[in-house]
Length: 281
Length: 258
Image (cartoon, rainbow over all chains, first blue to last red; front, side):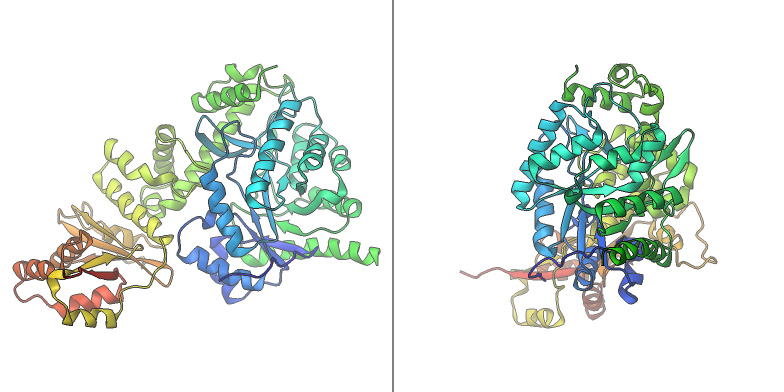
């Protein structure tokens, strides 16, 4: 099956596509505007995942949210991984392809987690060159997501928001703005979340993520395993007022709830987006 | 100022070894390097444990959360991930379980589950059809060989491990009782895929021998001889119906006669 052109993603709420909900989504497609999935889950040669994605794709606009490219790593880009991603993009034509501003491997060893870069001129040059390389292979702009971090590198001389803005200016990529990550970092490191958000160029924000976190000792951990916290909804409202309405994903990866819970969270996002649309008109 | 490569390598060492001294100098003193590295170490380990649990759900249910966590911890230490794609991550677990001192049933169960994991995402292709099979009747069987479907795995176990696998399926009856230890009984199993769902089917001895021969490229005439030697009254129609229904084969090759 091939698709003539990527269906654009409307400035409405979508949900993550997880195998846990495959059957339910096929039998009774939920009233959400779009879906997002991790392309790595479809790197296999065949079977149910690809077949389900084909059916889902005929009904919903799609976004790919990668977790394995290790954009900030000092190892060479894994071109076998990139090739698999490219094959999937050709087949399913997602409207967006995103990755994280992070690294997850060094010396050939992967941690499969989103590890923070020091925000330095060296990192900036490095990650911009890598994003250029990936965008050249994929022949499309990437969206880069801000991550949660549980440490601050001593030599980080560039504020995170400015670092991201410079990545956008240098590479022409877009930003996937994760509001939960902004909030979690602001609590863990006593930062002003608005300072970060004000540094982000509004026209570069193409998509927003919302998710839930858990508390572990003194840390808030970005688990994607809870409903969106009220403080995150408040920050989201601020972001929508500031940036304008954007496609917004309810991200939920662990402790997966029933589909109606996800749809209900998406509805809450749609109410905020709808309020912004109404104000604009 | 340390280079990016040095920072990543030092952090990697900290997470692997559980020590934080090498990376502490690069972390802002406002954050406890010890706590940060310990937290990342825990998050990374939990993530891999979760991946193994998803790959080996029956083994996980069988041994329980605590024991599975211990197994996963040992595995994560011995087998680091080498890919941004986690699908192949657990492939060494059966071999790992074989070298640690635990009941052999666990390694065999893991071997069965890894086959299921592979079959779930194996390549799609049409299975051998009834018509294709019928067409073989007019050919010289010594010129015909068979192809196992990409979504088929043939396995042999020293005991009927599939009984544990079946009893621990989420939809299995709570009344299902499997006596342990399992009897020492050579058991062949075929793992296949029908409508996207993975199936595990036990095979009787002759069926297993024939499929194993077919998977090695033994020609149809020799396969027939193996069947007759094993069971003089072998029921070929039943066997062929099983092959077609379970989609075990994907096709045949016919040698060109000169």
